Image (cartoon, rainbow, N blue to C red; front, side):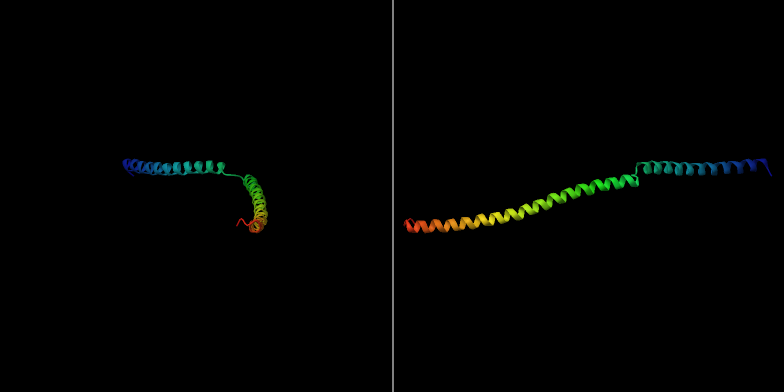
Length: 103
């Protein structure tokens, strides 16, 4: 074979190897990027701990909401009793005014 042809073929192969090297560099940088992302992710234990904290907070909020709902029911009952007393007192006032001839 001709020496020039051999050199030409070697240079072509070098160029192809350079192209492959560039592709491997991109793949390597992606792998490093993904490795950093995995390091930032929570472990299973950390996730469960976080979930437990959230659930505990939600349980506390639910207790508060239940207490407020019960207070609302009792407050409505108290308002109804007071309104009933007001109605009776207004009737009494009207009767008194009739007796005193003020109405």
